Image (cartoon, rainbow, N blue to C red):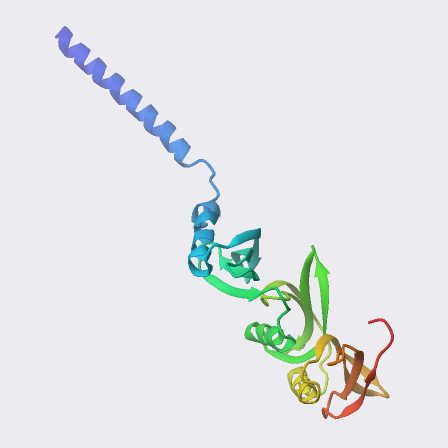
Length: 241
């Protein structure tokens, strides 16, 4: 009987210790661990993936950011033939979203196309190139179908949307799209480099002003009727932009 009592006591002690261990272990399992961090692909794996595609690359810079509510890694690197490139990679799946060479910014028409992929753009108000946090960006102001004015900041090389905000404004009359104006302008100036554009008023009519460098690298201003697309003037613009 004494042995039976010991056996029961030992069993109770073991059960008590086991329950305590389960509780402690459970407490540790429920400790706050960032869920996102667990799902992010290791940086080494992403770099290895880039090296498989582009050879023995030299990584220059890596940063984590967000694009359209998803985490991405922006990786600047020099490839095996000495070209500087920028890759935008989904931080969770490792999928390469965009790769662009850093020799020259993306054409403005392609930047606008990136904006139109996300928004129902009615009219482009103005565009400009700027520097933010040491990075070259393109800023596009436009109106959507709901008569909201947007200001969208994009990476000048990849077209990745970095930031944007909106506010309501009064609707305007029908305008010729900026893409049509730029296409017509490039028919005359094949190698023009767009510096900035804006929607303005001239003699009580809406106009588009396009500031650019021509084939001889002279600064010029092209003024176009925003309603008809007719060129009003196209001449040298000596004033600082």
